[in-house]
Length: 197
Image 1 (cartoon, helix red, strand yellow):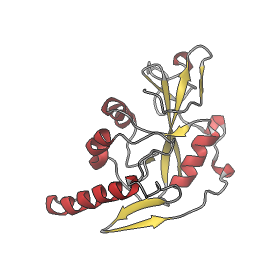
Image 2 (cartoon, helix red, strand yellow):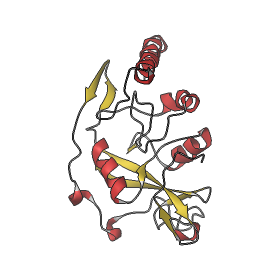
Image 3 (cartoon, helix red, strand yellow):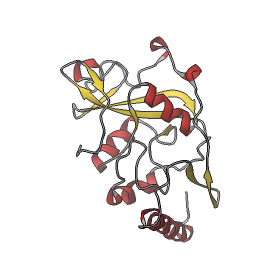
Image 4 (cartoon, one colour):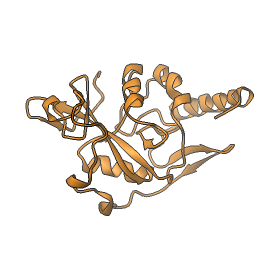
């Protein structure tokens, strides 16, 4: 994405952005998306509009993995078409393209959150199952938190930042949702991800 000589000013600017956002007098970005595109950065403020027409019926959803995969299916506490991770989390990748804001709303309608990443192991699982060039996750450029409200771990962030393609929030992509598995009920439940995963 960047040549070696162009990467360092961008990294310094990224570090500066985090310092400003995390400073004592600065409030975290609560509305809008900071984006980097072709040499310029901007802030996109866009309201979340209702997109009920994009909510697929159950029969329109296509599982990303076939039913033979041991990580797929309700026997691990996830709905069919969701992918189980370590028997405690469920991930769903929608193949319906929408903006960042539409993806966030759709995850909410599924009683889930936009995906957050809290370890390199979890990031590897996500990238093994989804092409991040084609999907939105809950990482907002310049924000100290993911869309689900959990803190961005700076050590993990700096190791994955080059592998997460940044895009303008109106770019049409699928979205990846995350929920906590409930093996006893065979379904998942919404849960705040502030606890250690």
